Length: 537
Image (cartoon, rainbow, N blue to C red; front, side):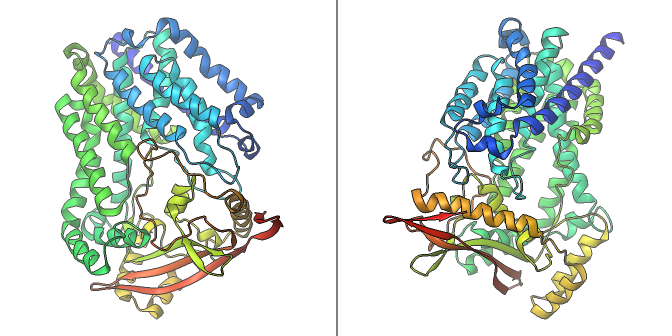
């Protein structure tokens, strides 16, 4: 009994340390704007006292691990090494191949090279893990800067959480002799928490837990993402045919999703159960990609690595990592996960028959407006792929990203039903907007966004577009949306940028464009420097 209690103390200490480390990385490794104007994020960040203190606290266990905690002492047949190496490789790959940032005008070559080297080093020795987090988190945070503009980033990714978890595990392994299977139990339980809370969010929508599985329409998601660029090579008629298949599959696929996500809490019951459920999550993510172009590749690789880890575990270690005790530990992790911000409690919504699709258009010197592809807005591809630009729109919003309706209780279901009943009639939709629309306009954020666009295109007007590393080297992006055929190619200076919003309704037999308007126009002030034209903020 004392021995089992000791393992519970190991788990509690591990989760507490992970929460502290995660909070410290979010506050101090995600730097202020001025740091990203320097050639090296790491070197500039070290001029901040709080980041220096965080670095010292994080790197002390690394120094100890060089001597006392090589991969060979884990004693789990290489299972921990496999999981952590894959998760760290994902973090390093994403950060080291992130797109050049025209807003700050820096390439961060030193940081990229160091991040790539540490990613390889993590497979050789666990001491590289904490250092990787310091470098990679600083690089990734540039996609959420400037801080004055509400841009979404990659925070909360499962592989990143597993790397943070292992960095927190290292001092416990060195100082207290915590066994590696404790880390694996916590890793699987945290992964299960992501899925479990996502299922709860879905079941909380509407008048009862049956609403999301029975009423949500996957065909609406497919048709909305088609307007964003997914399967953009297909015409409307073919997309409508595919959507009929998606509609027929909606209820069985959604019931299966709930079963997999709720069932994730049983992963630690038995190795076979874990493998089946992990394979189910991989299949689920592949289905999401096929139906929407939203690619959870990080989760697919991480879950595949966990399957490999389960197969690698020696029988005596597997007996400790699975069973009734680890299931009880899963319950403890489920309670702790929201408190350490290691899950997504709001990952549930209804896919509406109505969507607001934001896009950028650039007005060239030739007077022609061309769409700017979301994937060309690196390193802000996620923010522009999601298109959460309601803060510049004076018109109240009805839906969120990709036509989603979020919330709990009866309100989301009521909005869904009223949009469905409108049948695409503009007058009926405006009546729905008056009852349910949410005013998201934020004038200070909109003005900061203007300044962001001016500074971003000031660089591209003068230097053109600097591409990400070539195919085969760069990490995949989250949204696989095709570039428009007639798009801005960064081959001439822009004189203005327009934020446009197309509102579409998914009727049974056709797509209805309810409105297509310019939400905001940002003029780029020009100065002529010899033969070049440069936009300035």
